[in-house]
Amino acid sequence: MTEHPQWRRSWRLLADLLAALLLAAVALWHYLIGQYEYILLPAVLCCLVGVIAYLDARRNSRLTHYLLLICACLMLYDQALIHSTLDPIWTSLPIALVLLLLPLGPALVLSCLALPLWLFIHSQMPPDVAQVISMLTFLACCTLASWEHLRQRDLARATDPSDADCDALNHATLHERLTGELERAQHLDQRLAVVILHLPQLEVASEQHGSRLQLSQLDQLCRAVHLHCRDHDILGRHCADTFWLILPNTTESGALLVTKRLEQALSEVRLADLGPLTLRSQLCALKPEEDWQIFLERLQRRTQTMTAD
Image (cartoon, rainbow, N blue to C red; front, side, top):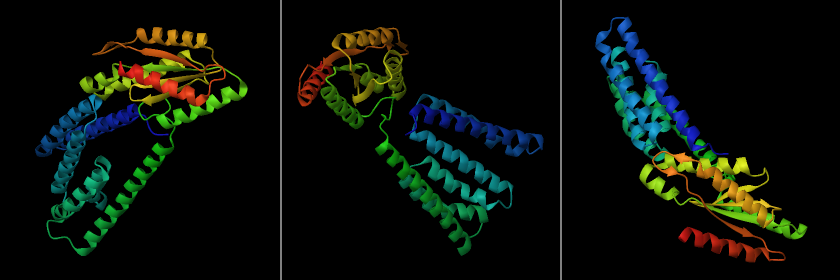
């Protein structure tokens, strides 16, 4: 299962704060041992990383990745000037940072371009063949690790039934589950209802206030559904701003009660910069002896009509 965006942002913010603390510790160490001329750079970089952490807390941006990479390279260059020799692990650190912070393609290009410069800065002379081979080997190993991580992530996304942005089923899995529930309802002669849930503010929130407010709306909807519905009820994301709530073995009157509970729960939600959370809903119930393909067509038409209004 893929990691939720909120968790990814939390881990990134924690890494930024740890980097700021490390830079502050380096500045404090130089102050305690009397190396006052080396305090300025880590202190300035500490403040810059604090600004980067603030930006990452509001909205993830590729610019903060490049800023973090610049801060790390400046700090390593400063340490290379202070110490006459550095452990090979520190000379290889820029390659690892580039592959961690940037996409694989730009990271490879930047690593190949910066590798000769970094070797020359470190040794203050043209690098020998052994150094070049060792650094290229390290670059190849890190690239393979990054490529395997991307492959595993794509595989997890392809096989994960959950939506990437919220705790609901994705489009493909939703339609598979709905088809299975329709066949089950026909074989067992049971009732089935599907509630169409539409968030009209979702696209506006994404355009005007960014993804953070959009994810907050999705999270509030999923929480309300899981709180007021049964465990075997199925919530899936049909499209960007529309969800289908599948209610197996549920009559039309029971589905209406569920819809009222959801609307009442979400009407009490107040979001910053947006106000009350608006939810539009419509019920589509399976009629007795109705063919499930006809029901799917009717459900699609009602969904298109609701989203078009």
